Image 1: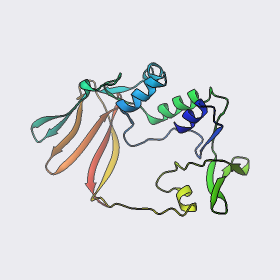
Image 2: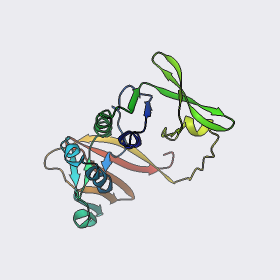
Image 3: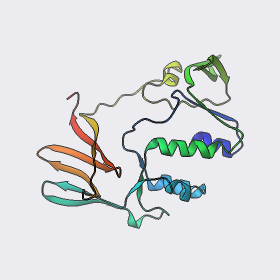
Amino acid sequence: MLGFLLARSGVDVTVLEKHTDFFRDFRGDTIHPSTLELMYELGLLDKILAIRHSEIHRASAFVGDQTVTMADLSHLPTHAKFVALMPQWDFLNFLASEAAQYPSFKLRMGWEATDLIQNDGVTTGVLANTPDGPVEIPATLTVGCDGRQATSRQTAHLPLLEEGVPIDVLWFRLSRNEHDPENGLGYMNYGRFLVLINRLDYFQIAFLIPKDG
């Protein structure tokens, strides 16, 4: 997204993606109304909503035998008053295709950043492994978006602050039938908590378990 916005402003930008495609499962592929509003401001809302997706307009939770409305998005001051559920690979492919229309945007799939180039304590680019061997990529600005095991953070010697939580989440999927609930977002009973995300053909399910359980 940052690469798209920079290229849209005429900035030369190179995005490195260590995988050769975006086809991986992510945890809860939700595109929230605030993001959809940004798509509207960029003139992309109709195009992105043309991609197959499901929508959450209202969300309910089931606590024992009681139903509780957790969210009603109909009052939001946005053009899309819902959460769109879309595989993140579709969203990323869409952004990549839109960004590719700008000549200053370069997406390098299968290129993995391995280290930072530093001169006198200043980061001036990255080293990367590519299908054709290692390369140096000089840059005025280097942005690391490489997740929890971040090469960029480690090589920049930036501190990591860890906050412990008492739970883990087990993610899995179950096939979905037409008569299954639309907005049964959370189910709490017998000391257990389950989240169902409607992905049209299946439910993406989050099951909360004790830490290291």
